[in-house]
Length: 169
Image (tube, rainbow, N blue to C red):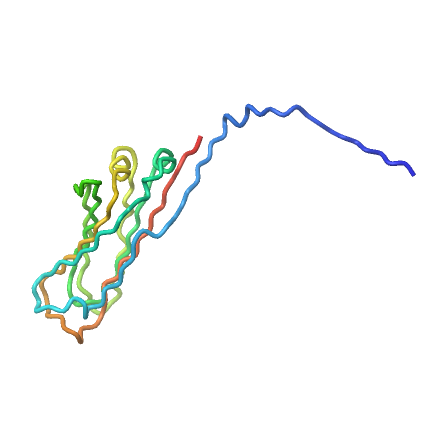
């Protein structure tokens, strides 16, 4: 019995790897909260709640150097009979405010009250500002309105995501 083997070959050009350009896109959850009306009990005057979170996404040099664009998306649902404003505050290492974005939320009136806000796009100088962010604060300001107590119904819910675009050469 005889065997026959054939082989093909070509010259490989490893210099082609110098032209390699990767452009990955990542989507991740940014923040979420769901505050029931019972936690906001008051006599009808305004009120402010806040939460500050560490944000270490830009500590990684590789990520910081290759990020070319970021988009933040926010959706807020209010089923409480009070209007609110949610302020997103970006802060640097010295707790200095870099940027504040405000999202007004109308009071619940019995119909769907889910608001999808326009995408916050961070490119160029605004992206440089975002890269300095080490803390994100959420301030929830309640407008004056009907009193809330331990029997009040509804909640204020925020969902947000981040889409990041990178270029790796």
